[in-house]
Amino acid sequence: MKSLNNIGFENTYANELNAICERCSPTSFNKSEILLRNYSLAAELGIDESFLDSKECLNIFSGRIVLENSIPIAQAYSGHQYGNFNPQMGDGRAILLGEINQKDIQLKGSGQTPFSKRGDGKSALGPVLREYVISEFMNSVNIPTTRSLMAIKSNENVFRDEETPGGILARVANSHIRIGTFEYVSYFKPNSLETLADYVIKRHYPELSDADNKYISLFAAICDRQSFLISKWMGVGFVHGVMNTDNMLVSGETIDYGPCAFMDEYNPSIYFSSIDKHGRYSYKNQPAIMIWNLSKLAEAFIPLVDKNKEKAVIELSEVLNLAMPTYQEYFYIEMSKKFGLKNVDQEVMNLVNNYLKILMDNSVDFVLSFRDLGKLLSDNKKIDDTVFKNVKNFNNWYFEFLNLLSLKKLTKLKVSKTMDSYNPCYIPRNHLVEDAIINAVTGDMKKINLIAELLKEPFTEKNGYESYTEPSCSDERYVTYCGT
Ligand code: AMP
Ligand code: MG
Image (cartoon, rainbow, N blue to C red; front, side, top):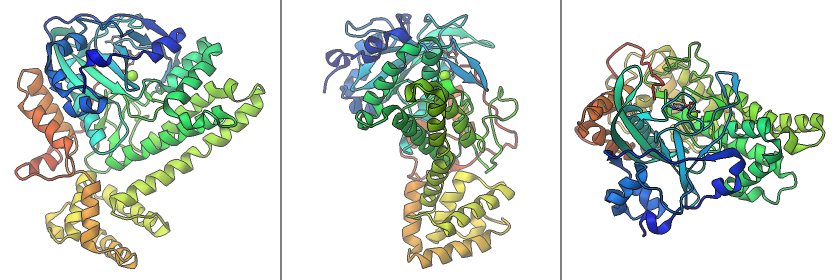
């Protein structure tokens, strides 16, 4: 194990894609302190865990020193935001320090960059803590995501609707290349399209480097990873909230935890973001929006695929048309796993659809329902002690489920165990995270430390923490704000 200083950064993006990034230095936050440290992620990166407690670490991640081997940059990208093209975007409040073991190490909230426009380039502390907790939860439930290495309090205020403490997130990602990065290059630097696509293949899809038409294969592979990702979101009731093309990574990881939230009661039409006026990015719209976003990527790919534009469009459309069926397949695989089943067939699909309809008609808590179902199977609970109490049609459904299990020669106890290892009991419930953040921002880290700890092992119920599995008692719709 080595400290960061000894390992040093690689700077492949800065070096190979210098046409689409700008060098810039992080602002120095002299009074900052580290609030949350991710020791296990440090270990995964090959960084000595004790390094996270060192002065040197704080110096690097608060912008006080830039290591000699780091070439800090802000990346350029475009984006379709709520359906409208914004060509000139880019990292306005994030700086990439470099890569360690092929992972990006980025500071989010570290001050202005050439892309900041009128923004301050800074982050409020609340959203930094929120991203830390939620992104690490996503990782704990095996959903591809950017990671959080550290949450830092800058001890300087930022000005949003009101003055509020500032923070920096040290974010780790397989890369930060977005659909919007391809849109930017196709719009401003078409001559660099192949360089970008080759870089993406080398970094994320090396198996394609010798493919016949490697760029159409690349497009297909990105469609596949996006389809898988969205199926995982749907399986845990995650509403991303701002699925603009600049927030979709071609590596297929979740990024940008601004206005996201988890649904409590199953309601496919739900959305939380205060600026998503018409629910464009609602839970049920996520697969369709994924396709819409991929269609924008397809447009950027046209010159890569064939000199003959019409031919390229036909080829890309053929691949794009497979994305929704692929998503559907992933979705039912995901759902069947949630029921402790191994394979998907028509009966399983009917079972899933009927279950979701019952949840919707009776406003049953989505996440809790799978844990309670596990408890029913293991005889640890009676129906009246579960979320299915007085739920119309549940008994019939349950009878069919038991029939299916016996047809598949699966025992109730085994299925119950499989379900408990697949369905989290703890998720970042909106009201809990919000309360913990309010406490943390005013200096009391107890609650957020506890939540971060519970979410590290989200499948293991711990005595005394039953209330952390429950939805909020409030009937008010939870609203998220982008005020990051
Ligand atoms: P996001 O909502 O994080 O996806 O950001 C959308 C765009 O706004 C990105 O180009 C960001 O870099 C930029 N942005 C967001 N907040 C700030 C800020 N405080 N200062 C400068 N740019 C920002
Ligand atoms: Mg973004």
